[in-house]
Image (cartoon, rainbow, N blue to C red; front, side):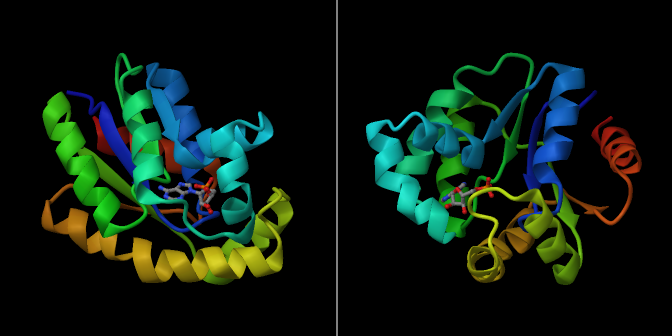
Length: 183
Ligand code: AMP
């Protein structure tokens, strides 16, 4: 059966958001990107947005508890399935997520780990031109990724749900690969 509870893991710039959007669109899944949701709060200048703006622009991580609340609220909206993109970012978030998903009876079925060489990531991010895509912030985000997010690869590998996806290919080849591995 097609998997419907998925997680996309990988460094900033690997294409997680793009691929998650494509798959969610064709399967009517909820695309739960914590970065997108946080940026929306910033744009709308909500209390939360004002609180996290500087952190996002510096490339550091927003408080775990705060992000967890956003994830919980949005998971409740999902219908056919969901893809988590950009969450969890550290082991503590992964443990909280496991608990929440156990309660919902919706455990993660597969984790797609998209990867690319660091120099390609930096080039891609610089071309993207988001507000937090400047050289200094990019370096911070890559450092945090390596130190705190990368250990999640081992975490999900131990659960036997990790699938490696080579991110250095064209968009369609990658999404076909993911679709095949979701089946
Ligand atoms: P992204 O769009 O995933 O690159 O996220 C952009 C920024 O939002 C990150 O650099 C963090 O500041 C914040 N952010 C997104 N997801 C998380 C998360 N799971 N935990 C903490 N901060 C996050």
